[in-house]
Length: 329
Length: 268
Image (tube, rainbow over the protein chains, first blue to last red):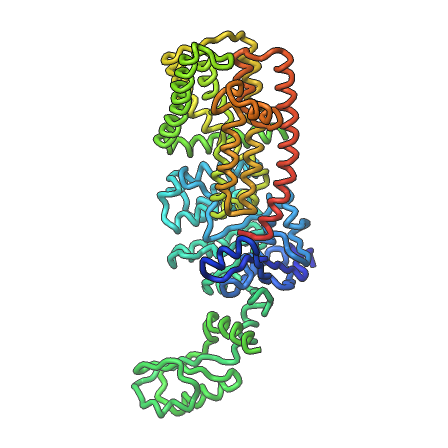
């Protein structure tokens, strides 16, 4: 097996956060005596990512995703533990390291608002010392894939959010990084723009065999791009494996959707399983995975079924399940 | 390597020029302020000189005129606004993007500053002639005064930019940056020769000024240009500039390293 691109071993990050009670007196007191509270943002996280892998990094707000990405891209020093990206220790911020990675933050922008994106692109070309021929080729490729043609010569402040995000992504990739850290790259975008960016990420990964670590709150992003996911909660890793495995492990249920020929009384289907939704001729039931086949058979035999499908529950629901189980344990 | 840095500066300059060109109006307004300050000083000090029979501590009316016109140019050449900007740069997350680039962030700021200076020359030079027309200066300089004065101004710019960029980094530790900035500005105004030639200031200020870096930033290049210094004073002046340059450059390295570590501990 090739060397991993990303290797984290017991990486931890603790923030010292100043803390005070509400009110004027408390504010005055805090001038003299500062109280700090240690917050473990990332707690002994270990995982590895192989070359060319696209890994989804999931967790609720404040789970430690962004902190981990910031450590991996060299912005933060860890409190303890070790980490490597390619041959580098990220927080040394060596130039050669910075030239082969990129960090895209959906809620922050690097492009200058006052000038067209193409001017910022040109600056990045010089700063990253991209050879002219390669730059031209990369730029053409990005313009084509992200449909940037009409956008790059307008001042950035005149672009819509989706247009700006496409330009941000292009700016972050002009030096053709091998490792991409994408923090909520599709946040706030409409469905079409989300899909375009998703398709682009997939294509970039395919063409350049880039390694990608991606966080997103949109499960559609994750389902479309990531074969493997890492779930983090309260700074700890709860799950690391294929998406399908997550569903199998954390959702002991399947959903059976039934289309009926005509509406029936509720007492006729109540004992088949947990009713999720029902309206007129449509019925959604949640049943234990082991009983799926049996229940489906009974449904077909006993009810006027015109159509029946068996599905895994939506991934959002599974993720919720993961967090819920963690709270219980 | 030098070619690489040169190319980066050229590109950064082009970008900064493009950005600042978007703000022609505010640029002009800023420049009006820059011209009004020496104008006020000139009205005050020429009046004082006249009242004292034409001389204040060796400065005649015409000497004051020459001093403040050159002061305007030296101030314009050496000033920066970086300390006021960094608070925003850090809070808005721009600092993260600067850290991600494979180049020290100070270069972008220097280029930005230079772009502004180039653009404002268009207003500064006519303004200098305008002030000279209103308040005829007494000039007894020779060509080498101007060359030496320019050199001292360049050194002063590098030294002042380094110093202020280093102070800007305090934004990484405290959120009371404006207090630091205000204090710095007041000290600079009094001890640099910006407010008035140091010769007319109280003895205590003159003595203290010798031990602080500020007079070498403004008073020295002005007095050198105006031909007011003896050869010994000139040598001492350049020596002091180089001494402080080494001190601030070394401190910058230290503060920068500590600052990045601090930033990475808080991670705004």
